[in-house]
Amino acid sequence: MTDIADAHLTRVHINREPYKSPNPTSGEALYALADVGKNERLYREVGGDDEDERIPRDETPLHLPQDAHFYSQKMLKILVNGDDHEIDTKEISYIRVVDLYVGSGGKPSNEYLVKYSHGPVDNPSGTLPPGQIVKVKDGMRFRVAGTGES
Image (tube, rainbow, N blue to C red; front, side):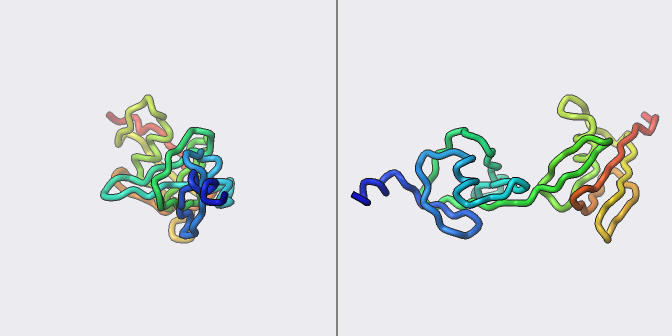
């Protein structure tokens, strides 16, 4: 009887721990299976140079290959001109900050002045120039303004 019940279960690894999951499943079910916290996001490891796949915390069906590997990553909350954003990296580039400011419809360029505050000990405050990156911590604030130059 157990063999029949296990027939639709697939072995997966989440944060290096093995689990058996129904297949197909959902992102919400995987988050619950491994008790992934609300301030974390789950990613499926992919091969080669491709970016790992972010798994949404919802009921979208997921088909699992045997022994798929997933990991969770803490999300950092930052403010860009007073708007909340979540990022999953410990560094952020000038262009990404500007992109968060102008949104998906705008064209990021080098025509903005980016200042930051409430940063980590290495860089508590300052100006982020074009082409550069800065270390990020939870609650960091960015202010983006046009330079008036073209």
